Length: 170
Image (tube, rainbow, N blue to C red):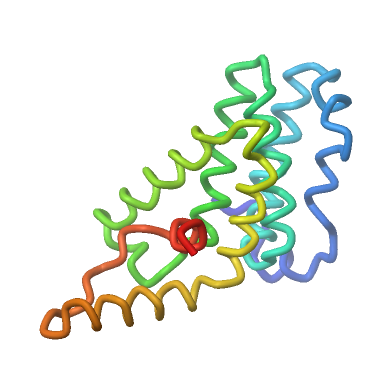
């Protein structure tokens, strides 16, 4: 749900990723209860404000992924994982998101990206998220064009994969 009306949150010029320290080791030195409060605060306000700010989404993704990779608390891991998936879904927004089958496919794909991440692939995955967030329209056009060339007599189906996947393949 919404904590504040969109008009209030969108007018605030605050980088909500500052809730996460630059040095993640200091984040893990605080108790898991405080970590959860920080994540819930980011979820309640930061995700709402950040969904319209691609730079904020990309910065948040790195922090959330680092937390999910390093947390020793199951609750902190679960929440940071869920938020990282929501970040991917926020850049995957397409006209097909309302369709349940397509949405389930995109949610599954986002979960695979997050679950498949490691400290070795963190930088590359963050770069892909940034690239995908900047090319979602290009993704739709490219896939539609490729489909039309390959299957000229068939309508383009609902896209059940994200710009993140097409960015990774490019």
